[in-house]
Image (cartoon, rainbow, N blue to C red; front, side, top):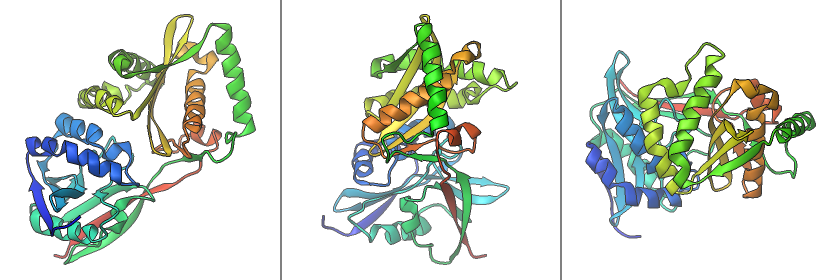
Length: 328
């Protein structure tokens, strides 16, 4: 690759969407990238929420995209903050840096300082331990604060049977109970995404209704986001969608992602009327085994310290936030 590094500021949705082909190419070259940094996730997020002024920085060398900071400017009580596109419903956020160009990281830092609209702080949120965002030096005339942010339990799939014996017994019991009623776990391909979303909305809402809550899909922008993102993610081969049927009725839905050696359990739902058969346990157990067979070395339960995650043998890994604040 030859040519000087050149930065560009993307301030409109059309310009962001136009980046998609080379954005995909850069994403595929980045070993730390997750599905959450792909255009299939972040473009639908922007279309659904648009919470501020788009201020994305794209860096090229020899005409080739080598770095991308998908951010927007929020102006509010906390000042003028550059925040990552995807914030809120995204468990891992990051920038994209071509691993063959170490000079891209300091250039991206300078470009955000010089080209992004006037900002008081630049927040690199929810950085997983392997995130590319840790390579970015603090912009000139700014100070840095590094904060432990979110626990993300991860199950390592290094052993043939990584799940603790007690949980394996519960899984076998659930499988036997389900089998007696004709239970079956079925994968959902690209063509089945619309009906899967219908099942997920119904079952996720039913599950949370037992706790007197609505669940995340009751929020219209969130639902619109998933309706746009899931077909794109499926087309890219990043989804792992499963449904559980018992006696011909869909009683559980699992929404997962997979890229490289990492699998991600993002969202699910089940019919509380079938809790005796433990639909959640059946679907997660199935997803873990499918991920292991695909060659994944890690199964990510994502943000939150819910007890069930540790029953599967997961251990906490912590996301961090890097906050760059301008002096004065």
